[in-house]
Image (cartoon, rainbow over all chains, first blue to last red; front, side, top):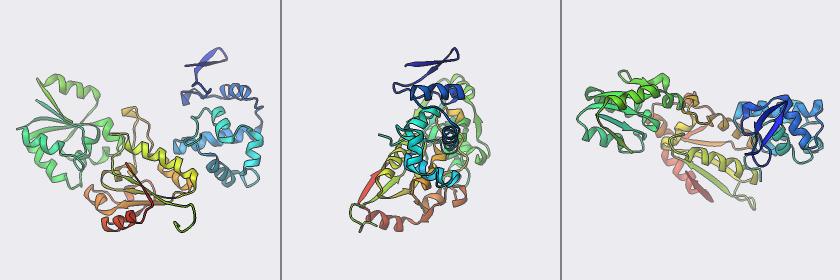
Length: 111
Length: 98
Length: 124
């Protein structure tokens, strides 16, 4: 298993860079993963990442992108609940890339 | 001796076979076997009959996982993993009704 | 629904209790994947399958993931047809109040008719 090193601590990841242990996640680890994805974390990015953490906590899965978009629209408003907004924040896919930064597993059904 | 049943009484003959063959002794319900320890089901009277001949135990973590911990039939003793080990150690032989 | 071109009626038939075997979790994962294909998906819970929806599951002690909260996410995936066998609930001392999601309770006969109307059945 590959590892990433943040603040002198080692964290286990899978081959694609997703954290293996959900409990390992913290803001510094998120920042580190974001950098490897060339994402500069802004308040808007954190909003999505925090939303994903909350969604996982409630349902024990990472949502599919369609479900995420709809759920964000419901909670944060239609100007944020659309794929254009989310893809601007996370160019390689909001579900895939944001989940990675949020320390969640890859969304089920994400191919 | 100790008998262990890990199948739901609603979808398997394992518990039936066990109590028809065995004259009595310790009976431990684990995994889906713990559904037989839940009160108010069609297996309720069956289990109460079993309790006349067997000392019946159910594995606590399996009860909790299935949301059954609050509906245990009177007379059935919940045990943890250490209790499981004790039962195996205390009995000379052990049959798993897989 | 199945009159719409390209849309088929899929029914997932769940008959196994959770955790004792891997069927319930596998079914749930396939359901979530299938949701991406915009089909007419329903889930039926028969026999021990009704135990999957029981409230109050706490899996810490068996060191297994508690996937019961995920049934509550199905609505967000536009999967809203959950059918539960009436006789199976009664035999297990359960009522609708013991379940963690809103369901439609049907008797065996009605479930059989519904099953008959499907284009695709996936059995777990």
